[in-house]
Image 1 (cartoon, rainbow, N blue to C red):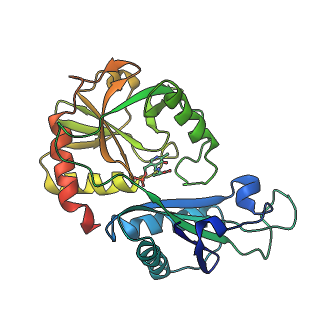
Image 2: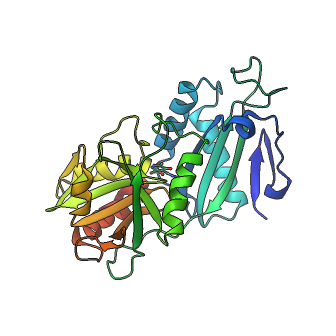
Length: 285
Ligand code: PDD
């Protein structure tokens, strides 16, 4: 049984309890993070915590934890759970109220919960060994604040289920102008003629930490050009390669969209080059 953290206490996950009057339970009123770690080494710890702190401030949840307090929590959880390939799941809600009332309550302490989830091992850099993904596409039906990593994920869950029910690994989404936004739980990249294109950061997508790290690595290296720009779905369907990124996936090649092959229908050379650079540099973040 894995060890979790809840409001100041480390305890077996099966013994962790929160009240049904917790705002997280009643309203999905909370912010979360997933930080990947491999044998005790985290990827992107500081930017993950900074994104969570920005999210908490945006929704007015007041929790005065320092980055170092979060580091101590993550380090303890990795040790107590025997290292390995762990996603550190951090979850802060507005806290436990005394009734159900929409307005932010006064004088309520946030609920802080954390546990670990198994994630796949570090991504291979071999085109012949990598797990390839198939995706569905769908009109993005989520809310207007997709840049906030909210625990209210029903929109994302429903979109993920659309792809899953069709036998696919993910659903990639487009807005009312037929422009690519992101996946239900990942960011999306469209590779054409050697250039990596990805939608710009705005309210329509989560500012992924894997995205942040990947784009920084690619720009510093300079051998693979990167563009953050609006991408019509017509370009997605005509891509040479499509990739997805998230904290659990690293960079994952997509070989099929809505039952049609992407490019050659196999992981491409730009994926291999980018994943090599990512693997070589990710622990510097
Ligand atoms: N998902 N977009 C959405 C909607 C996401 O839920 C995620 C992450 C990403 C990628 O962000 P990052 O690179 O910081 O993981 C983009 C996490 C892993 C999850 O909900 O499990």
